[in-house]
Image 1 (cartoon, helix red, strand yellow):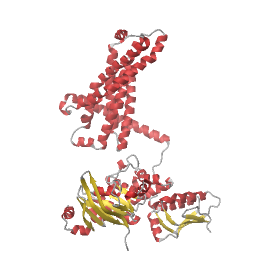
Image 2: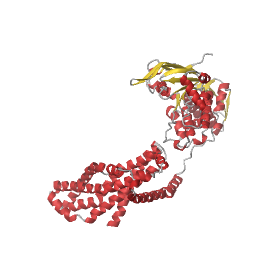
Image 3: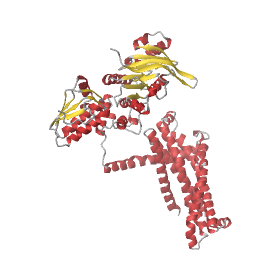
Image 4: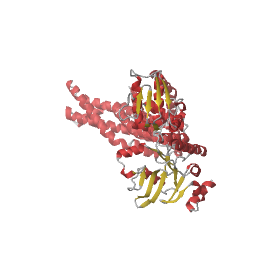
Length: 248
Length: 371
């Protein structure tokens, strides 16, 4: 069976001033696949994510999501795209002035006509999904690092997005919390049929979660394949990345 | 056979059966809920309802939650409700999103007004007042102790604070106190003229400015300008763990951050108050000259008779008390911040309101003591 292509990146370039950050990057992400983008600092990972989310303006025809060139989306279509796309920010980016429940409900309240009783039920259900039942009435400042990440994940999936972007979700977590978060992301992918694109530096996390790895070095993809292939790779940068990771 | 099927909808009613077909998602679930609830209050509401999902191809969490919500609402009205004929895919989603998974999660109940008031009052008395007085004691102790321990102070910091709190406030204080003196004299002039007591405008302006208005206007302006800055600075330091970092370096944040502000404020505030006095009186002199034909020479002669040393001293003492109140209030609200960006905003607002209120209360008490 041919897999459905959700993201198609074709010869994507980007520069900041004279510095070329992405030098013709091409890859695809398929339905229900977890694609992990890795690479050293300054390799262009976040630039790719920002282009995919159209936070930066990519060149025309370089980024297609759900078979649409993202540069052709009108303002209204872009809003619709954001509603249907979950984004999990590195630091959670929850609004400190709202409780966890209110943070998670925000998207639904703004973009649906559902009665508040149903919105509350959906929020509770999503909190249950991320094992954070006790946090409904707590403010972000009252959550631990792991709880904050799970709350951010619940917020990212509140609209049942078919596509989820995660920017270093495991940063700053202890190994146990990280493993739990990884399992949660895998469960959500399975239960909600999501396609996930993730940036991470955590080797253990990559080995657990990734279906496909895209390795960036100085704005170019130097490796694309499964985690097992990555571990066996002879490419120096890839070898160093996984070698050091295993040795830790 | 369909009894009721709203236009362009993916659901229909047939006696006691609710058919839902195609897709039930965030976009169309609200319509279904609205129509189904409307039916509850209609004449032909059923005694038993079957929600038939045989034609439902897909649903998201909002769609499934809406189905369970309808079941709950119908059952509240004693209408037994069954969800039937779901495909395997939909059954899995019904299982995943079933209410028993999350119904134990409770939203905070809003307590009644008396409870909330009582709780706030108790918290205010038992925690806030106590910690405010502890902070006063702490700052007083370190302000006194550090006078004799030069090494503990960062070089140049007291001067920096004196410039920030005092020198930089001079233009605004000059402008506003001149205007207030001018307006004060203008407002009083017509009344005094009616009684032929024109010359007493000098006494009125001089005494009002020296004993009351000068120090008070200065304190209110400094509370708004520097009090808010102190609260915001300390709150931001607290939120970003800078105060913790200082503690872990063995540095007392109060001594490092607050005491130089106390010294800087105490050094400059009496001068600010005096500048306010002079400018206010100058404003009054201009109004007296323009409106009552009292020349500057006459004004100065009369002024020398109406100024008492006590008024000058009172103004100086008041301004010192006011600046200490402002610094302590800013510090207190800065240190008690709990949340991030929002907390800093709240702390700043509260500190300005509290500082101005406390300055006015202190002014009343000092007024009672000195007069």
